[in-house]
Amino acid sequence: PVLDLLERVNGYVQILAGIGEVKPLLEAPSNGSTVITFEGAEIRISGLNSDIDLNAQKVRLEKLILDKEKQISGFKGRLSNEGYLSNAKPEVIEETRNLLALAEADLEAAQRSLANLD
Image (tube, rainbow, N blue to C red):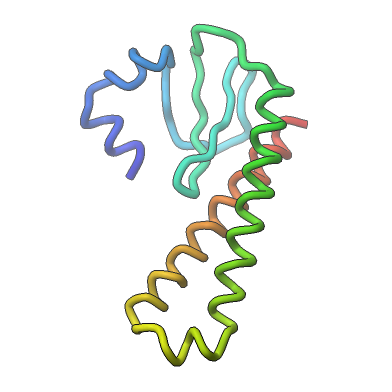
């Protein structure tokens, strides 16, 4: 979905962000590129106009991982609460399940990105 959107705007995002290329991460990141996590997917970007501060990237990913773990814990807590399950509307419960799945995908992608920095 993200790459489709980028293709539809014909490179304007790359130009405005100072990015040479955006493509899905299909193999290990190459030199001169970095990996970002967005909507549960890892995206490799290359041709940045400025250097990436790897320590800042690590700190950002570590914070993202902690935030996602906290979100996941909250969603799992709701879904294991009988009161929530018996009182909430089915569409609200389904939305909570969807948010849990998205948070888990974001967490996994952030963990992989952090591992690739080491």
